[in-house]
Length: 166
Image (cartoon, rainbow, N blue to C red; front, side):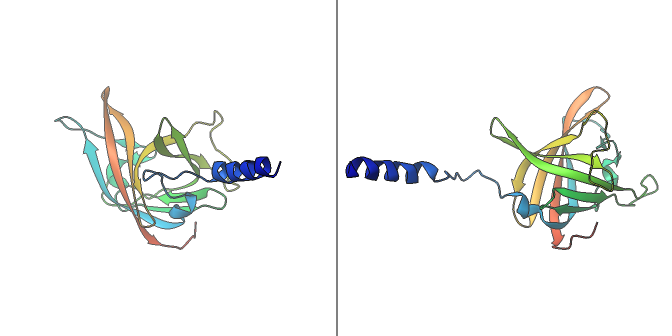
């Protein structure tokens, strides 16, 4: 009987251990703070493309934009950059999360009101594939369309501070 109990305890201890692989991303806490989009690239075939991202602004307005991520309630905000005459500063509150399906890790968000409730009645939002995430950098790929052609926009985030002011 003692052997059976011992075997059960050993089995239980080994089965409860979380398996970690090198491809696992840090948790939501890794995003805590204020981030800036430092680079935007287009992954497309030859041609001229225009990306209107997240139904908010042209991709050029996102370079230099500031993003705040608060992990304890998965809220945050972003403010677009006024880099040229076509950009105007806009600020959006968001609720965000990570999503994983078929070993593809994604960052997703929805626009929110002051009480962190989704603004969209049909509960739609935006999802981007996470290419890399560390305590100081994040790279995501945002699917986009222009004149019926699909392409990807790669956005590089760099952490500015642990400041959480919305």
